[in-house]
Length: 224
Image (cartoon, rainbow, N blue to C red):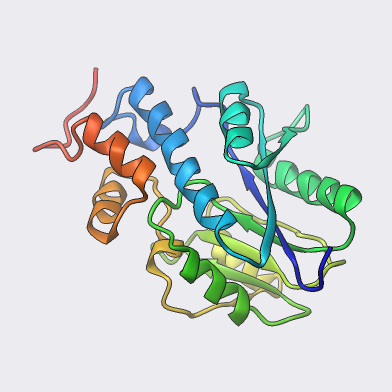
């Protein structure tokens, strides 16, 4: 593997558990379609970056796994027996498996719901992240982590995703990257986030699904 190559890892929940915070605005079927569309746009943006040599998606969901393969990503099964810290367990295990399979490589953990991310933003972020260190891209809320990058081919990923993850990563020594990357920072948890994605410019897969399901509705009403 060439010097300074980056392998991206992305974790995706089972579709029946994904995006529960949108349950008051979207039906389960629409949420599942949206998750797959946002993953599509995220993987496409990542694979368009020259420095990223591969993407691995870790998931327990066969539909997600099938989609990931069609997008050219590798798939790693979610480790069995994951606990409340399952996301971090899954990402850490996947990072270890990637290095066992491909040898030493820099690592990038991305959220799976970055449909407005542009490849140029991701490329600039990787160029900005200091070598030999772990860095984070804080999300648009100022609390979460949109991306965690390790510019060291041997250092562990050491993910600390979860509530307040930006503070957790930075407190553990990660560099807070300050670049202007609005699409990279815009992960989707709420109805307002979907509106922000459309205003910023959604990827083609996400834009198509949102158009098909009639988003945005005139009023974000409860879905029964």
